[in-house]
Amino acid sequence: ERGLFLSCGGVVLKFFRTLQWRLMAILFLLIICLMMTVGTFLITTIEETYSNSFISDMARFEVELNNSNVLSSNVVSEDEAYKDELFKVFKTYYQIDGTTKKGYLLSGTGVMLLPTDKAILNEPLEITNNIILAESGKVGNLNLEGEYFDYAKPVLRDGKVEYIFYLKQDK
Image (cartoon, rainbow, N blue to C red; front, top):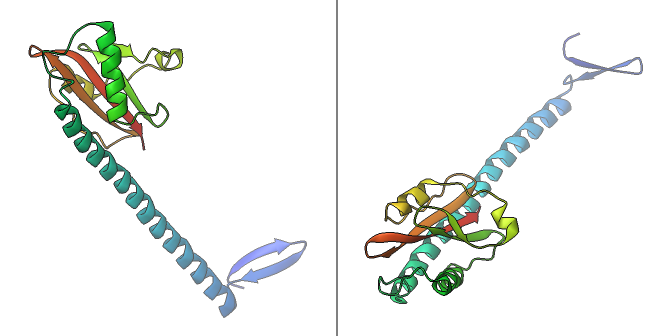
């Protein structure tokens, strides 16, 4: 009387007594293990594809932005029109859509200046390591860990951080 028993309405069913049930159990476990392995591989591959795409986009846009002379020291100003124009340029170059890819224009101390949408202002902006690096005048690293990708670029005037452009993209 060895084996797994299941009582069903007074009738006792004996599982794994026959070769057929044992083979089914082995096949079922094999399929589960294979599905877990393939699923892990697919998820890793997709995340790697997104991160490589983000890195190449940032490198390409950085070159295009530097070639446009929008960020040269003699152009940067505190004027509202310049802030709006700068934010439009960043939105264009970095292809910000506002849903999965969000862009922010921050002051040199990390205070959000743009966008001014009430829905966005109600969400607190997390001060990341990239923003802290940008406050010191260095371009932030491409952060590929966590729930999102992020990137921060300082806009300098006379060697001082005037603005920080912060990009946050969902994975």
